[in-house]
Image (cartoon, rainbow, N blue to C red):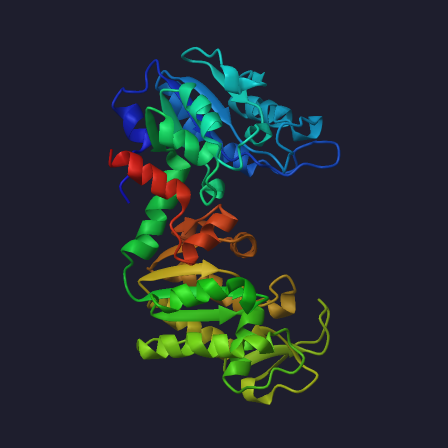
Length: 397
């Protein structure tokens, strides 16, 4: 992907004295009292802010927080707690500016936070008048919020259309580079792991990947539906019998290309869905009517692990079993450790996937961990994200 990198602008000296507007993603969880309970996204935004300040810019940063009603301010929607926490982390006072669309007073070397951008009337609909006002505030617009890259809103898309310069911050640039490596120019074989409870929520992803990947590993409830489509019994396991034709179509699309959707040959079952339920390993052909399939078996895990270790590129979205329950976590752990041991470039995304990566401590062995849930899923569907599209368009002049 061809786009302007903020890091390059800073290195060239073009940022000194300029007004820089950074769209970050600091949409952090809060408790009932408004206290921030997890600040990873705030911490992740700091490198871009420091880059701008070190380059001598007058810096404005904004983010969305929660789901406010446009034009109706409530204290619960304020970025005040975020500004406080960011100030603590950066060891400086960060003023919070309300009603900023009409103008912002900020000098080189200063950093101000602009109140929740989703409070502005017309933000979600990418109102042109609002976008032009935002663009008029800056000399350089920096998009550094991958979690919003799939939305064409005024603070993510419109401002990029009208700002004098529009570029990608370090977080967004890293996502764009990783996505290019995984999808635009993948090293083969390209293996995708797509797991989750329902085929219906990932059907478009499965169809898109079936046209491109060399191997499509399915897990969780999705795998149960594929097992059913392959003629296997799954007992009372979670599945979607009405989507068997769709699952078969995905398998046929892969087969036509000389690729495959490997069906589990052994599984781990239980009679009830509980952490303390006795786990039984059995052949996939021996699942009983009252069985629940909660994980792939050791034979299947070993077979998939061997294929992952021989991959050129791995895309991972979703654990292959109920890894929260120790007795049914071995499949996901085996897949995770195989990805970590593989020389392949790997990209992983999705909340449960990130939780599994953290549980098995393999963060440093995954090529890239994507932070944008919805945006990552849209990339898997083969969609061009609005943020990528406009930044490429602006780079092309």
